[in-house]
Length: 337
Image (cartoon, rainbow, N blue to C red; front, side):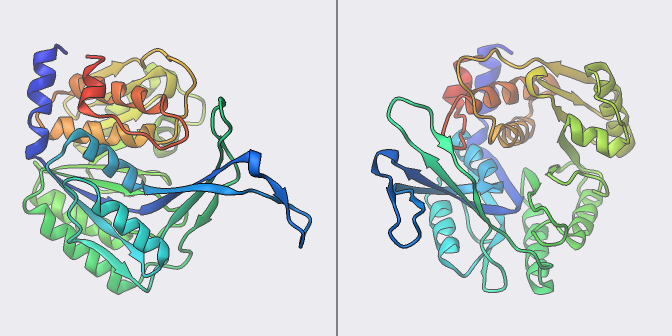
């Protein structure tokens, strides 16, 4: 891709309307100063003194953060948070993001706010060290009324959106935003609007998903297709091509140090290698940056290889940001084009 083509694609980003349907969580970072450690008089256990707390949207919110960094014009989160302190923090964090519209983001007392609490030891002159995480999740099925609210929002946004992202982050099926009923609604929308870009990613795999664009890693592709051994790049290419042809939608596969691969229903395949490492890395958030950049570039008219190239650069930028779940701006990506 040359720089003019890059400018042409990214110039359309401020005109895009993108909906993110999925599990938004609060990423809460507790920065610990080890120089201020002490021992509790009551328990005799070590005390970690927190000197700074910062919060940002996580899970589906990480995709949102990347869309904001790219300058997408309007971003519509479709999800929920609890009527609790974490929910207040999450909504406040979302409200500060440029272009984010909270018209379809539900706050409800029927759910807890999905939260990743990440203690970080911050020692001068050293890389941050993350301690055991403290998570808050929902372990019961998402109430029917909440599901219906979300489905209504998706149907409304599908009328005018340029793209819809599905992000399923929960460990237990039916406890988050992307439920069987919501996927049934997505299937109807896909049939009614075959030209609408819808891209899905799920930590539990995409088996049973309707025919939308799939984004997954190599292990998830193996699980989806029943492969048992570690796959070569050539085998991944064949499987991705087969899934794309069968579903009638493109398939994208992240390959870690081997880069990114994509296949279209008409048989096109492209493989883009990963960029060389430039120092210490933290891979958290890399996959979400890929999702955001694939969606944005494809919605702006990029071709298969072009979208993979931009996503590969973005993920390289993100993994070199330590102690946070990073993002890549248009300027960040442009520096490598």
